[in-house]
Image 1 (tube, one colour):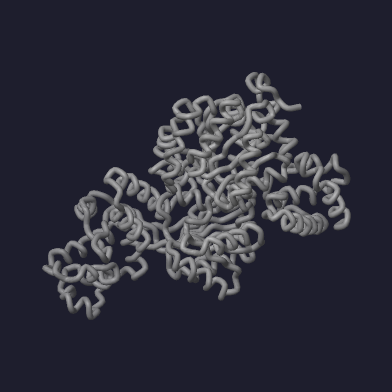
Image 2 (image 1 turned 135 degrees about the horizontal axis):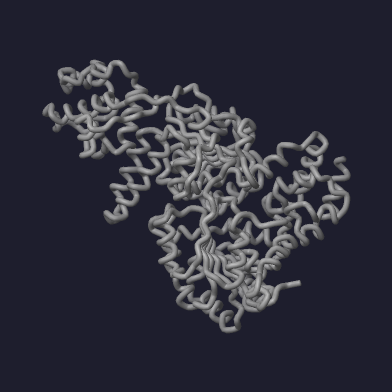
Length: 640
């Protein structure tokens, strides 16, 4: 029985639990979901931070259904991506919830049909892009709904986009404050997976969520194994990682430029892997086709710039790889969070080198932003550099950035294979002294290119190259004082000195230069512990199945079901996947929006023999039971 307005004000939890079970097929809320749903259903404003895969959508979908049932009208969901709107509406339609979207993919007649349904009160949820929401026409429609008491809730997804301090700022989000100004009586819910304290404060201020309650879930994704390697041969390392750990698995590879995306995708295909490119410079229709294939097919690898990924709900992405250093921890966390949404083991892999650090610092320095913003971006980059250069637990470092305390996880590269460290203080002093001697040698008129890392290492190691002879650097007192270290060791020293803030890069060719902090090292006032360079032949990480002991909670439950199927259950699972693929094609949806793998695995393992038994499987709501129940039982019986 639908909850009344009075029921929601008194206690919305029983009705919320009923909706969760009957509509979505889940037996219980997870974490803070229930508290969020209760608060929002009663008309409270909220800021919700939950990791990717943590169930943010239910935090507004359940209140939307409750408030619609109580006669309060439609929930408007602000969403930045057309693909995400399409998938969310498709999933809600499968669950029997009246929903629609308004975006540029609709023609005039389709748009008018949605608007008629909206004005008639037939929709429970409407998804729209921020530029659509703030348009005069749409604001007029919402005013009409509000006057009749049919505007139930505003849900602002990917709310970090409103903040200039966030990793994906979008100007259209800034104007969403109009929702509070024109509809102050309508509750608002802002949701994001990634926001540090500064970004959270900015979200609250810019959206005028002054009285909003904050719900901050743990940022930990225990099923994700973090692995960061020093770049030796990026392509070779990447191919070794994929073939040794994720053959035939779906994955996302992030590259820093459109050209690198195209070249990497083509090269992976030459190596026998199924890879597709995605970047903003491609034809829009080709981007859409590639994204649809990635969402609908198994085992595809998407090579992309950061233009790809927000709102990608594909649950079985087994790895996310970065070929270069991202801009900051927020971006890294958001991107890696697209792996392992189903709770099964997944990996976040990154290769990086000194050139990445130089490039990111140059992007900040050359940006037209003001000094305050640049300082903030430098702090964010420094935090990321501390993460990649860490020789202790990656997860502890990552979570501490979001003000969350944790213990060593036992499931990152540093925990599983603790890196060797050494006292790099003397080596650092040699390197800094050599750079100082360059500036004192009266060669400042030479091209800045002359002082690159390779030349510096040649001088330190005592290599009498043509360039060294040309500049007379063999006469420097620092010539040959670092012959005891290899090229790789010296490159690691330089990279870590830049990461630690003892060296700057400057000029057109990003050459190394001393800064004020370098004096601390040269004067012997600090000691520096450095990581020993990893050997190129080292394996990227431990096999996924060797890490299953480190999962906890829902992640462990989901992965255990998928891994513990016996041969008969596996046959039933495979038959269900084949059936699901046909349904997905008929409905033009990704297969996981019909049923996720974990739900099919539960069916295969439990082997229900009637509709009542099938209704007890998590993920089977009332609409899906009616629509597919008999077919599922037939498939299970046929595979027995």
